[in-house]
Structure formats: structure tokens, C-alpha cells
Amino acid sequence: MRMIKRLINNAPIRHKLISLLLLISMLPTIGLGILSGWAVENIIEKQVIDQTLQLIGEVNKTAEVYVSHMQNLTYLISMNEEMEAFFNHEKEDGEADYKRRTFLQGLTSLYSEAAGILVVNDKGEMISNEMYERTPTDLTKEPWYLAAVANEGIFKMIGKPVNRNIRSHVHYREDEVVSAVRAVIDPETQRVKGVVLIDLKLRVLAEATKNIRLGKTGYLMIMDENGGNIYAPETSKLFLPKKWFSQDRSGYFSKRIKGEEYQFIYETSSFTNWTTVGVFKAGEPVFEVKEIHLYVLLFLLTAAFLGMSASYYLSHSMSRPILKLNAVMKTAESGNFSTFYQEEREDEIGLLGKSFNRLMMRIRELMSVTERQERQKREAELRALQAQINPHFLYNTLDTINWMARKKGAEEVSGLVQALSKLFRISLSKGKDIISLSDEFEHVENYLKIQKARYRDKLNYSIEMTGLCDDRLILKLVLQPIVENAIYHGIKEKKGPGHITIKGMEEDGSLIIKIEDDGAGMDEEKLKQITDQFKHRDDTAGYGMINVHERIALTFGEPYGLTVESRKGAGTAVTIRLPILAKGGTSLE
Image (tube, rainbow, N blue to C red; front, top):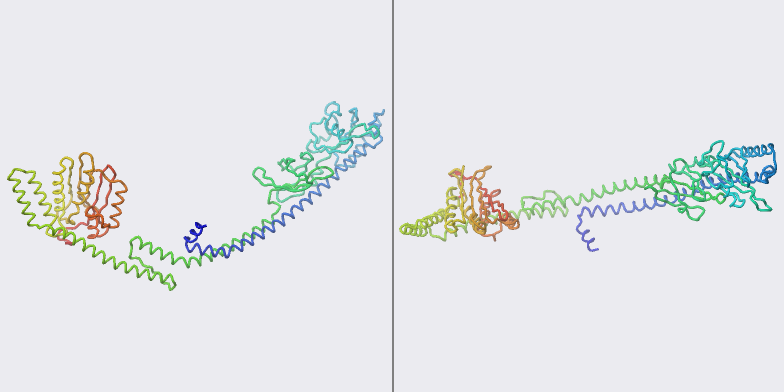
């Protein structure tokens, strides 16, 4: 809960306004649309189920009429005198047989739905007007005969014929007829005298159902009591297990078959025990519901568009100036204090913008004062350092040491003292801040000579000034602190001898001096720390590379200063970028 509250509190004002306006405008509309759609869908679905059950009931009645006709035919046949003589095995002539066949033919003419009638007595003898045996066999052993005997004289529909030894002159296929049987029982002895077999044309059932459509592709099918198909249209490829149907005589259910949702509505006839099933894909019969849903959806979309447009306009008009003020503040936060909020507004946001502008002006004034004071401080520190040494006393003392060393024949000591003398001479430079480039290079070379005398073979160096003009000027004491860092933090920390290379060149209108060493180098964390100090001008860094970078930046501004590249164990490279200053040109002294 606390996390949700924090998320809400931290969300942008524009999002809060849009959410609030959308909730007020959209929530009642969506609720009304969903409620009305649900109510209409339930009403129409109930109507569809009732109408489908009515259609199924009519089909069941039609099937019952045809089946009752077949039942009546079995009674007429069993009560006919000629047929009774046939069941009792009485002697007969050809005329009796002709009368029986004529009688059967009259029945099939009267009941055109009968595809054929076959009468068999208990000795396997048969009479039929349309059927005959495929091969000579005992018909009393046929499954349909045994099923009739087992039903003890009660009329029974046994479904479509399968592999029976009987054919029709019209050659009806097994899937074009359905068979009904009834055993003829002697009322006194209860002996089975024979069986009447009648085939019912399925065409009459197809005519009763073919014009009935459920939805766009729905249809009706008829199943027997064992779940076998009595009738199904040619387009049907579904097999419905009997276990899907409950014990109730009618009902409906849904099933997913091959990735599609189907709905089934069924009713079982109490007379035939056949179940008529309405099959359709879910949603097809309720096209009106879809149409209503479409209207509701269009209404919701229209309301959503209007609500979002109004919400966006109102929230944008309120949040845009806030975002603009925030962007200006971020620009100032990055270090650009010359930016101002420029939109004219008289509301609370406009007052904040004006206060921000006054704050920026005050900051710029304070920065200007601070920068001037910082520069004066650096200059005073450098001058104070220079003033600590009396030039005449230093020169005279070093000259005396040099003379005494030569007198004693200590040439190495003499050279070292001479280098130190030149080092201090250039460092003082009569109080000048800008000196010639050649003096600066001579200064760092004398410093390297002194360090070479200390470290000997561990320290090696080379200085290149190829292509540089003699009249170039440079800010004093920018090379020596960097070379000192290279020695103490690079060469000294390295195992074995090291080398320092100093190269000067002119490139893209700037003076470039690169100082490289093959010493210990720095890891990424140390390098990042130095780079960050360059950016923030950290006064706690001392008089090393940071001090040099600050002096150059304060003197010449951007983009001049130092850049450092280093890799642990591979050395360090420091690049100094300075403006090109020539003797006789603009002086900064």
C-alpha cells in the first residue's frame, strides 16, 4: 500500500490530471456499456436456446411420425392372413407368394418413406418386394434378427445397417437408410414365428432438417440411443461422445473442439430414443448481440476519444509550463546559468518563473565575483611562492657552488648545479606569467636532468619540439608538475627502467604538448577521480595536474586545459591544449 501511495505521489502532474478526468468521464460510461451488453446478451442467448429447442422438437415430431409409420407397418404385416400362413409354414402355391409380394409392394407405395420391407420366418425363409440375399445364408443368424428376437415382439429401431447379408434392388447405401425390426410372437405359445425388417429412408429426415440453420454455419444432427449418427449433414465432421450428454431429456453445453468453441443444444425423443442436437460455433446464433456490442463499443470509443482529448488539453495547458520551467532548471543544474524562463504568465507558475530568473541573475553575479576572486587568489599564491626566494641570493649561491665544483673537478656536480640554477631562473622569470616556449621546455629539461642524476638508469627521457616556431609563448610552469607526477606516480612505481616522452606540436589552431610515460599507469577509478576533479575544479587537489588544469582554464577558458589517458600497467598520457601566443601579439602578462 505504501509503495502504491509513493508511486501516485511521484507520478507527473499531467498523468494525475489525465487519470482523474478519464476516471470521471469514462468509468460510468464503461460501466453502463458493460451492464447493458451483459443484460442483452443473456436475454438473446435465452431466446436462442428456446427457439432452437422448439426447432428440435419439430424435427423430433417429424421423426416420430415416420417411425410410427414403420411400427404400424410391422403390425399390418403380422396381422395379414397371407403373412400369417407364411409364419406358420402352411403349404402354399405360387399365387399365395404373389399375393404376399403384392401386399408388401402396396405398403411401400402407401408409405414412400419405407426403402424396403423384408419378412423372415423362423426357418430363415424370406419374402420381400425390394430386398434379396447377397449370398445364401441363414437369415435367422443375422444380428438384426437376433436383436428383434431379444426385444420380445416390441418394435425397435436398430440404426444404420452394417455388414448385413441383404441388398436392395435400388442399391441404397448403408448410410442412406436406418433399420427397424419387430419380432412376430405367437400369442399363445410366445414362440417367435419370424421377424419383420423395414428400412427407413434417411432422405425424409434430411428434408425435415436441411432448411434449418443455426447462425451462419450451424446445423441439426440426429443420434441414436448408443451415440451413433442417424443423420448429419455432409459438412459435419464432428463425433459427439454419448458421455457429453447428461441424463436429462434436454439441455445444452459447450465444448472446445480442435481449437474452436462449439455450443450444443439437444433434446431426446421419448418414442424413438433418438437425440436431435443443434450444433453451432459459439457466438454465431447471437449476431444481434455482436451488433449491440459493436454499437456499445463505438459509443465507448467515441466517449473515450472525447474524454482523452479534453483530458489531454486541460492537463497539457497546466503541465506544459511546469515542464518548461523544469527543463530550464535542469539546464541551469548542468552548469549553464545563462538560461531564463521566458514565458509570460500571471499565474502561480509565472511567479515561479520570475523568481527563477531573478535567482539566475544573482547566481551569475556571484559567479563573476567568485571567478575574479579565484583568479586573484591563484595569482597571489604564485607570486607569494616566487617572493619566498631572493633571486640574487639564489643565483650567487648556486654560482659559488658551481665554481667550487669545477675547481675540485666534479663536472657532474657542476652540471647538476648549473641545471638547478637555470631551473630557478626560469621559475622566477622576473615575475612574469607568460614565457617563451623554448624557456618552458628548457625548464622541464633541467628538471629532468636533476631527476636523472637521482634515478640514473631507471629514468630516461626524450624531448621533441619539431615544427614549433621560436616566437611562441606559453603559460609558465605547466610542464614541470606533470613530469613530476609522471616520475613519482609512474616511473618510480614501475619495476625496471622507465621512459618519459615530451612532444610539442601545433594542431587545429592550438598548441598541443603531450607528455607520455610507460610507468605503472592508473586504474579506471583513479582516472575517473582525476577527470571529475578537472570538471569540478576541486581546490583540495593541490599543485599537481589539477592545479595546472585550473590555471590554464582560468587564464584562457574553454576548451583549453588537460586531458588524461591511462591504463593500469601500461602508462599514462597527458595532453595539454593551449592557445597559440606569439611574441609581439596580444599579451596576458
